[in-house]
Length: 127
Image (cartoon, rainbow, N blue to C red; front, side, top):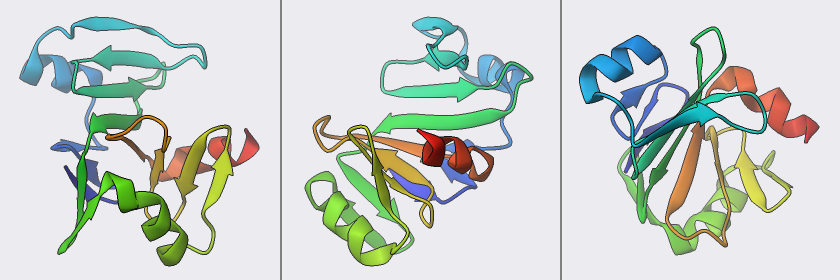
């Protein structure tokens, strides 16, 4: 899965609106409000989370290999890659969070990576 930090992930730009998402992909398999108040659109292999006002916060997708520029990083090597590439990386709950790369992932949930909008990084830091 290709990541362009803070721009796009899994073929979805962070400028995407819920209306554009529904026009492109139709209704999701599941849709609802999650425990932190974001509106989730779950398409099975990708989940997009929006603020109430429609701003895209997170894109979670299955990414057994993360493509970042010319690099291909297998999920099993992602934690060590993040630690080497981002001195500001931190752990919250079970997640590794990389502010430089705009991503979060739980090493115990193989293959799932969440791309973060730049504006939501402070919320991750507060957790």
